[in-house]
Image (tube, rainbow, N blue to C red; front, side, top):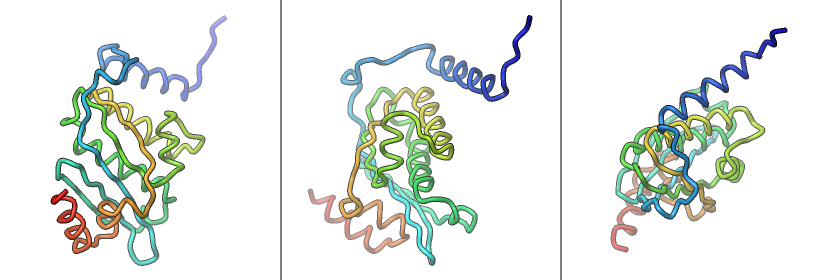
Amino acid sequence: CKRRTTACFRRDCNNLADLLESNCGRGYYDYPLFDAAPTVWSDASKSKNYTGGGYVSECGRYDFWKYGSAAARKPIDELEADAVLRAAQARGHTWRGRRVPVHIDNTAFQLSLAKGWSRAPRLTRVIKQLYKLSAVHDFVLVPLRITSGDNEGADALSRGDMQRYAEWATSHAAV
């Protein structure tokens, strides 16, 4: 008697096979062997007038963007997750063999990323993409909680406030 599997199960098996193939079956049990990468701060903002995201890396690289009207209707935790995903997509190739501290000011996404899953399918989708990027580029994300008040650089970028970001960057370049 043949048993059938669901499409979801087959898709999960294919994703697992892709992940194992992309990192050649390696598993990591001891992260201290990884060097530290430049710290990354990410943020997203959502208001009636402006919805945007951004990230800044300790190496000096940064990016910011304004979301369209469709993205502006998404929950803030999904936008925060997207900011981390965009940072990993842009900088992941430079993080090979490193632990990447990522400061996230959204507790729901930060804790979900730390445990590797979420009950919210929208966050699980992003977490899966982040794990695939980490397997392909051979890095480990270390999600860290930061308060919104301490996330000044990324907060300024997510709001499109380049003057405030420039002031923040100048004050941190002197440190």
